[in-house]
Length: 551
Image (cartoon, rainbow, N blue to C red):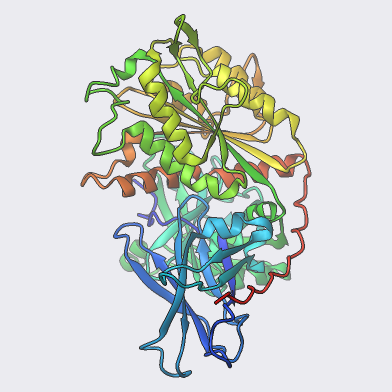
């Protein structure tokens, strides 16, 4: 039995408030006409732009600072495209035929990743005209950093096991606006008791109620079974506001089983659950570190082993079709285009492994794709793709598949900067069986104490059991009796994300969503274990007003 048929909706990392200002050119008539900014967001599935909201109308100034802000759900792992259209308006009521002044396109991540979470963009869209600039500032809503810690116990739960008592655990669900429920926490199982006391646990308040303190929180009580067919004992509902009252008093909830209630006239309940303690603290968030200047350094490593097939043949995983990207190129583009918003210099080291290099045919497991040993950096994700395609034309695919050299290469860079100003993300794209498992585990265990994360994307039809072992979600990776300090590896097989209709944009969005979802928490876990606090954001530079245009 699956637990409750919960909706698969992801929780936003946080809510972001965008403040908008404009600096308009001096060639406008005097006094300047009123201005308004309209924000559009882009649907991932249809690519359509939809109006999200408008600022108020401000008149009689070239440099409007709008009061009305846009509050957006922020997902680090998604490319959230925004479009800001600026209009001159004839009157405060009529914006049906506005005078279009220009527009700016950018991703929400670019605003957050800008210095101090601020960006200034030139407005474009009116040929031959200077349209001025738009200034955007991102601020995290304060209630998004709250963490709730609570402890619960139960009394006289129904006995479900034929031999012995029950093995109870709790499952928490957040309610969604459409009436569905999303799982947000599971407690541990307490064995063989009808009166369990669960360990205290912490959960972000946004994961519990997404900022709505009166939203229903549903809690199911189950009896654990080894085969996964957990028995439903009963349920109760509450809300964040109700839970938070327990700071002053114990709160007792009746556990009810709807089926039993219908069948038995004398049914009272299936036991009770008591909230023993509840407290709320604030903690630093991913956005705090990015705003304070922490940069994400993105490195790529691509598998050039012969098992990928001849790149000139359409059956090869590296095949360069004129019509569509290969799985390698899609994975690289999907992950890279999101991470690049958080890297100010947009320079990305890119390596290949498992190839014979010209002219002498030396086998290499960490050769720079741009063929420059002194500087392996490529400019932007497009630069990485260009170097990757160039390497496919010049090197010979060979083997074996070694991961450790490139992991150690990035780890050496990460070890030099431990003050929290840099965090390294290594993307390894591979088609299969790893040849240096022992050395790779050793490399991962060593890297787990450094400011770095590793993403492994498996392409092609191979079985990837070894990769699953490196992803420490279930069992932490260990080497020679030493366990990884943190879980820093995320593995996914690309085939699980391919859109059946052939929509490459959707395939890439799905992949990025899954492989990047753990990065913010991995960065935070490093900062917490090292007690590194975010730096204060740099002071805002007052933006110069555009100079008058020359006739």
